[in-house]
Length: 138
Image 1 (cartoon, helix red, strand yellow):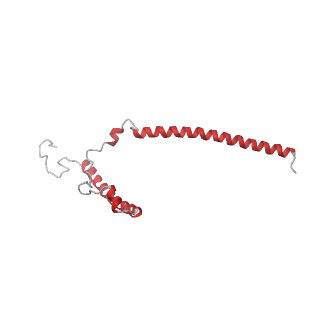
Image 2 (cartoon, one colour):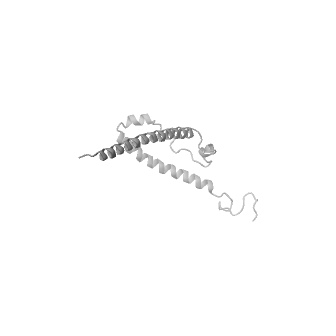
Image 3 (cartoon, helix red, strand yellow):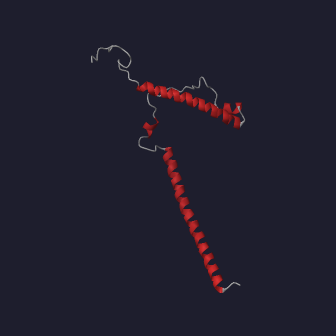
């Protein structure tokens, strides 16, 4: 048997739940507004330089090697590749395999170029018995 006190407690509990739902909805709107603004800000930053040194960050060092896959040797475009291999699963598998191989080749080329750029070019390190220009008598 439901008493008057039970009804009052149920009414209070339901009222409290409704208030919580309203509060939650309001907070969700606030968070969504903040997230939307953050997304706009991030998009704007990504379109421009992220730091004051943005241009320096993208310049390649002088020792950077040329692309080992020139278009003259590998003339196929992505569109031609999709036509040649229409099955997306097979195309993904082939692309992944080739990507790993090309990554290894490019990594080796970059590493060799970096080592070569850091190599000492003094006459002693080059294996000469004396300075060919006579500038270093020590």
